[in-house]
Length: 279
Image (cartoon, rainbow, N blue to C red; front, side):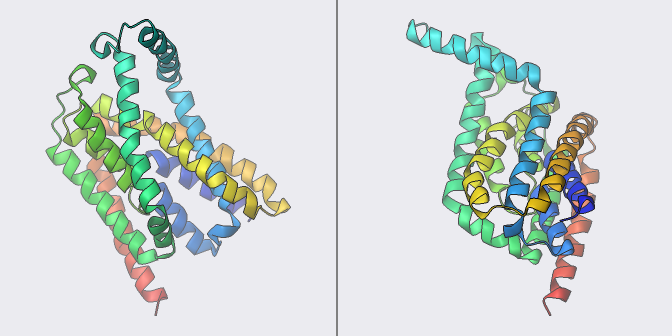
């Protein structure tokens, strides 16, 4: 792997992880284009995800710190018999909903991981995933009614958003796009939909990296890849920060439909490309 390839893959991961265009789909297409076998760069892929995780920690450091402090206070309240008091503690309620949303995501990942992984080698299915992403974005922009803030958010909202995040394990289906769809369709205000989508990405990305790391370390990586890996990871982190800032503006300005046009066009192109190359 060259430095140029690492920079391109890092840029794709950082931007596509948080923009609603599917990082998994873009990376798979790029690896097909470069002729890079996924088994040879599994550790690189895992570390790219760590790079994007760093982006979330930087952008939402205040929320994350408040959630950590609230966890400690929650444990104290439960021990002293004060209970959860979710309506009195906004960050406690947010933390509980993040946990609730993560459960269906984790169950879908555990139950269907092998099936989803087998689809990464199918370029046509990845193209179909892009088409699904475009449809979700378009529908959420047209039908989403932003009315509920955190005080009116409920557990059903969190479960549905978690299910949508789980579905995004499919290559070509955007995680941020799916969770944004879940948030907007359930009536969350746009600012909260974005914030919640990125915060629930933390356990999702971290869990995926932890599960893949043993396999990646076992497969190892060529010593010559060390430099490109570091560069790609840094590029993923920096571009991830830019993507989060852009995504906040795009959602609040109601411009998700433009991303739907992009992924629809990309999906059609990838399907045609896959059909031609399979002949």
